[in-house]
Image: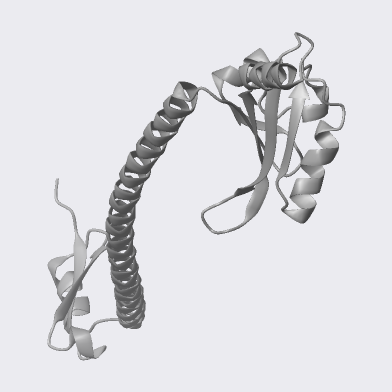
Length: 248
């Protein structure tokens, strides 16, 4: 069917953003004669003007909201850009830290390798020294400043009850065949006075030994215990006894 509408066309000058544009408004209208319909078009009513004004106000409000939204969007964009710059800076710092840590790790590996080499050399030197000591036909006992066992030769085990687990054990706790009750006292005197102690002592098997206790001096000239040597002089003693008998 036919629909009757009122048509209003008006040029816009405000707001500035809409200057030069035209607004067209359609309103439903009851059926009228041709003459009646033409009259309102020639003379728009007050209602139409008010409605156009409302539209203009709505358009202005929308324009303001759009402007506000653009400002908020711009502010958000600036914040995102700032955040991105901070993240980029943090990433650069992390990369730099990673490179520094990698460099430190390489240095530590180098130091560890050098340390391992020195430890291997030290272990070899200790092994060499132990072999030298074991090859000497002399019983030797090394003790620290508290007269605890530090090291000994195989020959020493024939006179003093020693085994690997006795390293660090006090001298007074060790069983010995030496008839030498003042052994610990003489060792402490040597530590205190740095004077060498030398005595001829018998064993429970009637063998004679020359016992010498000397200070243990480190390479830096620090006294760090004592060394006790035990040399079998049984044959010498027997020879001396024979000579005395021959001269009587």
